[in-house]
Image (cartoon, rainbow, N blue to C red):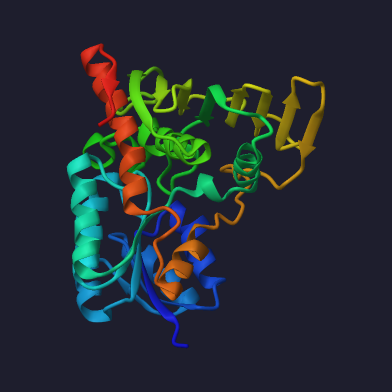
Length: 340
């Protein structure tokens, strides 16, 4: 079987740590092009993995005609680049948030449909072993209905992660559009939708810039969510967890509680009202310092090989994006916002 010819657009940290090594490790993939406006970054990966280096993604699409692309660029470019790639006949894996408006997300989904290509969004939280295990526990019915929840994602900020440090696009509003909510909050809105197999119906949000200097993008948010099932909970995203990085979720249910990512060794803890406690060591959740294989690349490749809907479809990405857009609207209006 011929290999899938993949181009990576954007050669920053998410490509360095996740996309490029995971494509390189997949036997069904040939890396054929790397694109970055800082051409030296693209050239470095072309030397390592073969393929061509480009500064211009449109030129790359025209000359290389890849089967698939990863779009790993600043948020404001996700939609235009994904649509151009789809129109060139390439399957698209786009980093989260998939877009910066609902209209953009809809246009991306339409472009993929029109061109008969797959569109997947890089929501890696779904693939992390503790989250997979937690969903299995929920589906077993042992905990009964989820009543309330808390899900949070916080770290010290992109200056420690981004290839450009404190000068990163993450802090430039025209390129990022949104800050911690687009970086971390959308991970948790996607996770809670997927884990609970439920949709968010209403959002209230406090979103602001509390401590990062010289930027207009949000560095903190605390949101209230009401799910269609009636469950209520909180979603927190922060770039100012300078000590005590956190990626945890707690679900309080009819028959007990499930704690996910709250303990360094027992990643999933189930405590039932009848007194029984189950502890599951199922593998860590990735952190900036400890990169685990994300599972996203393999899932994307599988969807292309089997011609099946990707594990995180464009519609999924759009629904998860809507939640955080509603949080911004709530902050701006001081009102609860219905997610429609």
